[in-house]
Amino acid sequence: MANIIGAIASSHTPTIGFAMDANKQDDAVWAPIFAAFEPVKAWLAAKKPDVLLMIYNDHVTSFFFDHYSAFALGIGDQYRVADEGGGARDLPPVGGHAGLSRHIGESLMADEFDMSFFQDKPLDHGCFSPLSIMWPHQKSDGQGEGSWPGTIVPLQCGVLQFPVPSARRCFKLGQGLRRAIESYPEDLDVAIVATGGLSHQVHGERCGFNNTSWDQQFLDLFEKDPEVLLNMTQADFARLGGWESAEIIMWMVMRGAMPAKINCLHREYYLPSMTGIAVAVYESEVAVDPALNAGAHELHRRHMAHQTQGAGKLEGTYPFTLQRSVDGYRINKYLHQLIDPAFRARFLADPDATYEEAGLPQIERDMIARRDWQAMIRYGVIFFLLEKLGAVVGVSNLHIYAAMRGESLEEFQRTRNTKAMYSVAGSASTDAASWDKAGAPPAR
Ligand code: FE2
Image (cartoon, rainbow, N blue to C red):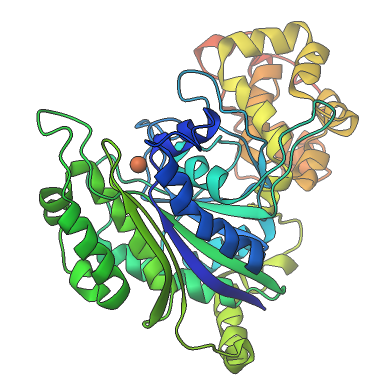
């Protein structure tokens, strides 16, 4: 069983990453930051968690306002460092524990948290600033990739565009997170890392606002009486700690995942410039034998499976699950580019060049080149990308349906009430939709 061995709370200000990259260990201004993180490093080195669950927020780097969500769980097996404007920091990509991510995602959805899921998005300073100073890593030697001591599961919280979740909602998500982690059947040691805050405001005339006495009170309440914080509003947090400090609701996710009584093993606070940098390590006050709740975890796994129970036995049906999404990501991403007219033109003119550019393996190139609709569905391509490919190459939806069933168009049409033909091809595809005019092209 997976086990939560403890938790870390940390500000995620980019100054931490800057101090590291600029080797400011001996600089009097920056030295307190390194000193504050030493006990965290030592705790991680002693406890050797397999996975860090990183609760962080992106700063309009990888998550933009064209689609903004409250809780986005990373489900991939690797995360790169984001370029936030001046080039990415020289850090190796960190591995993601995709199996645990999937389990957490399924568990939280079963518990009625409507999560969003991401992969193939680089993570910004919200995650990598604290991660890089607390978890010693090997940079690439130029021959191969660098490495980290373990893997992560990132949970990105959308705290920039209001409305955002309340502190209490974050706490409840944390309680769900604990159920999810502890019911994961594989033996794994997991540490929860909450990032963000403390007091700061970086915009407007109030920019530069800090409140160190509130920060200390917050740290006390967080440990001993979080209920007080859960009753507070975003406006309360903003009034006391500055507008951007309201991101500390992310700490409530971690608090909800920890037992009611926790011991604080380390706590440090330093305000060098704009943001109150707080660092803390917590463990459960009572050591609980994970086996005590084995029955409850088994029941929870059954609850998680309830909605799709039996779906796997449906003939000719391929549910598009998180696993399928991760496994088929490369070819689905490739085909998704067909919504771009410039890519469509390049694909039609020189498909091999586009396969090469996307790094598709031969099996994927062959399926696309053969227009092997049935093989692509079995492989993990979602149907709605097949119909886009059909639109581009002049094959109707009906041809694709027939091919997936292993039938000719005529055989399939006999199963319909009419012989209606259609595709998602739009105004630019009048030539491609020749099947609607005369002599249908072959389905493959
Ligand atoms: Fe932040």
